[in-house]
Length: 586
Image (cartoon, rainbow, N blue to C red; front, side, top):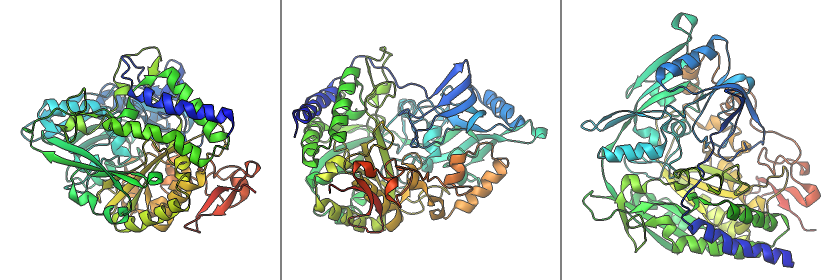
């Protein structure tokens, strides 16, 4: 190993643990995704990472920022009257695929950033109605203040209620109605295009038993703009959380059973260490002592200089041919630091004194403090802020039917056993592989059966076609999950190839498309991307040189990889029907 490589390794060992443990007084919140050069005209829209999977720039002719439902109707009507394409953008646009892209300067973006208020709270009936642009943080705090709890949610509270519903975002649970937020939607108001005789836009009100609610509550944004959402809440409760680290030798047996044992169970798998961190998380009475808080370490703000410095080190490690064992050595101290810091949990909002951590639901269920602080001129920020040359990574999420999860885990272990160290390069070892439980849903684009979601974060080069070290590991895992085990990609994550042909796996597809045709017969809320994903026209695959390196296709020839850098299209090591870009030293 060269002195330069040794120096690069030293930076993650020292800088990254320090960066995530610092509680920065200020923080530049993430930028809004829509930027215009002339007021609200000549705009671009992106996601929270500043790049879509195909690295394209998404343009739009103009953006509207309605503050009321009446203004929202006017914005939709104005575009519908001239047959302009429309797409909805949320405050931070956390969906990685091109869901918010209207397709060019002839299109309109409708931002829900200012539709962010509580409409009503009915404590007696346990109902809460909010505007679609309200971020999850504000929603769960308002519910808690009223003595109510949203039973489940994603773990990051920077999502808006409209955005997380459109992609089927979820927490982790097989109990009751499960961990997906859309299962608690009992009412929804949505603005859709209409004929001229109706003013070019109408508000459709869908109650709990309306036949179209199963289409609207997970819709990918192709039906119209959600204006308001009514949620069925529960009386305020607390949770008791503990994390237990065990050997992964029996993970194949535990993976289907663990979610039945604890209401909010999940698992974090560290394949290269042969360890699993089991989350023991259950509801307790609101009178139980404790005021615990979740403040996830990797969603805290960090000093900009440290983020830039750490990313530069990561790039040198990834792109200078560093051995897998050395990548493990560089990453392991940070994983150990996260564990020692109780993954960001505290017993009283300040310090961690031991498990279990007991706290109110709205203080435990989600976090994301890097979006909370006043602007500090980019002296610090969220690690993934696109204005900072800091973290830049892929996030893949795919759900495997619970009945098939043991066999899938066994295949992953077989792959790991061939060379455990390669998982350090293939998977971000700071977070490991997060496993969350998702229950079957009646939503047409929801999960058709009980499943377990595998969430993986991994390095992404800022240079097109630059392979990441041991990229074939994650690629084989994803293809195996989707092809061999009938898995489904998360609608708001993943690279292009994961969505190829996926719509055929949803039994409710035909019903969903019939609702879509009624609500938006001209396809004004559709785009090239949504048409590809929904199987209406074309394919999400983009076949060209290095497309498999970028996740835009599954390779079928060497040029889809990076042969000039030693990466060639080869069968998977465990599932030989996979086709992955493998590094061949000879």
